[in-house]
Image 1 (tube, rainbow, N blue to C red):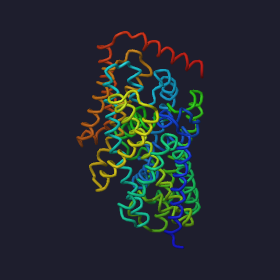
Image 2 (cartoon, helix red, strand yellow):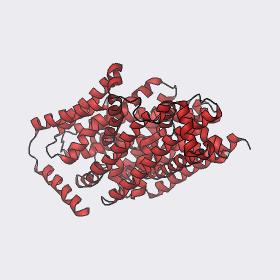
Image 3 (tube, helix red, strand yellow):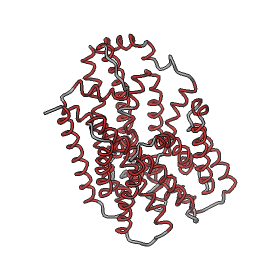
Length: 493
């Protein structure tokens, strides 16, 4: 058999496994809480790895190794910022959000939590935040589909559209039928595949390059600054890279995992597993790039596209079937993010817009059906947008991390730690944070000077506090829920 055939077999086995997990989750899904939040039954390992896999996408296996391969360890500051951000997200947000969302009307989405937490009788906050999620994530999903199409085109020579349809069909199938459980279980498996691949490739690569000493010498021959975090760094550049960590507090597809874990006690174990997974995976990605630099220097070869260093080493080091598993790791990274964003978008559409505006008293069976139809509708629209590789999608996605972080991050933190946050303060903070992040990121000189999440997050935080202080009115129910949350946290530690 040819190399491509072996690799295709590995991909097919991976796809079948995803569909099987989707079918298993479908059998366990009976009501809306099951479909949207897995019945709040996730264990710490599944919660941790599914959050990590949903977060990292193809950036972990292609973007980060490519950047380090091309520019050296100075590109690693983003990885440091993300690790710190993820740690504080688990530490500050996870326990309180898990308890608060259950105490406050058993909320199953971020918009419904904010609506219930702030007692917004107008439903305006819920609808506006639901629309923000719907708009941003629809284009985010579309970008993921583009990545899937390009993956099949570059790896197997299929047409872009064939790859696009394959990835879309499989992701939509297991997400549509299995809901949140299917997304979480598949993300767990995908996280394991990514983790193992990122450890195996650099370790095996070191044998090829002659060990650590030889590898370091070869890298220095290419560029002595390649192994320095500081040689070509600027203060603004380091601050911008570290600031990526701020985005975690406002990413709906990540923090929704905190709401789904089985108990607040499990968040500590999940944090340790999640941060361990993240640290080793990021370390593996950086090491893959550095081993790649040494290998290509020793062989006197040139790698045309630095972002393919992980794929190239996998194909050089291993049997084609194993190399196919390495390719599956990239596909896993892409698909895990698409599915996570799809289920959150579906939740926003049904739980926060449809249910709030049009139909308040239907059965759970009806809402689960609406959730599945929402997954299908969003997927078809995203597929339509992705059909012609429109670069404006990618531009929008570049803003999305900063946009979500600036819009939701300050509001989520204040809702968990400050009694006096009001619905008007939250609305003003969300709007101002998102607008500042968008405008700042659109102006090249400003974007180049400082990553837009810094001014966006700061603006959202300040505006939310100021407007809340102006509009604050004592509410006994808010006070009671806040105090009950703290008491529950203390009791369940």
